Structure formats: structure tokens, C-alpha cells
Image 1 (cartoon, rainbow, N blue to C red):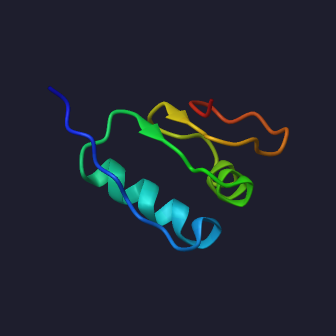
Image 2: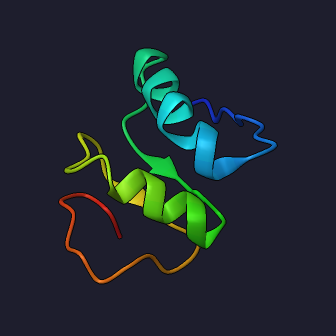
Length: 68
């Protein structure tokens, strides 16, 4: 069984990149989120992602590896 971890955020646009890095450090093999449009934009602005990531909103039109 694969554990599911939830990371709380009060401001996704400011915190999402740090939370993503924390999830990777904790061993994430896939991530789900962010939920907000600003959060998706902030994460996609980081460039290509190292694990598959299912965004729960639309981002801008740029293509980022592993962001779905």
C-alpha cells in the first residue's frame, strides 16, 4: 500500500514550490494539486517537474513535462 500525504497551504501561489519540494523529499512518486489557478501557474513556472503531477485547475498555456 502506498501512503497518501496531505500538505496544507494557506497561500498556494507562494507556498506550492516549497510544498512540492517537500513532497519529493518525503518520497512522492506522484503528486496531485495544486488546486488554484495561481498555484498551478507558480508550479509550472518552476519548469519541468520530476514526477507526474495532476493539477486540479488550469494553468497558462505553457507546456511543462509531467504536469497534467
